[in-house]
Length: 121
Image (cartoon, rainbow, N blue to C red):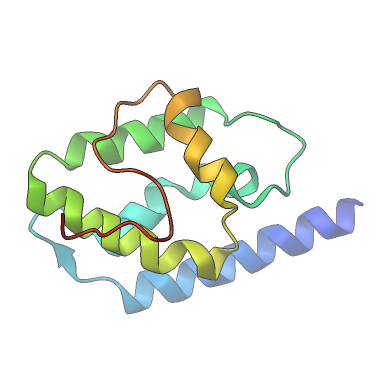
């Protein structure tokens, strides 16, 4: 069981590295897609359902709060939405976990969390 956790962590780290390299462009001057994904690294095991915690860690919620603070304009929120919508599936993020993250971290979001969300609206 420990081997599976290490393997999942290594896979997540490798995917993160690839996303950081590919998506290093700046999102409307606020934050790059790579930085956005990096802020959510502490949420990896929770979002992928590979950890033993049924709730996100303090570090995870801190990263999510940081992202929420960066998304101050409509354009910022649209760009972050598109970034996370594109990268989430490549990390194996579980939709139900992603939907619960704002609730559990006590964040108010103006964008529904769904793979079908239209980030341009």
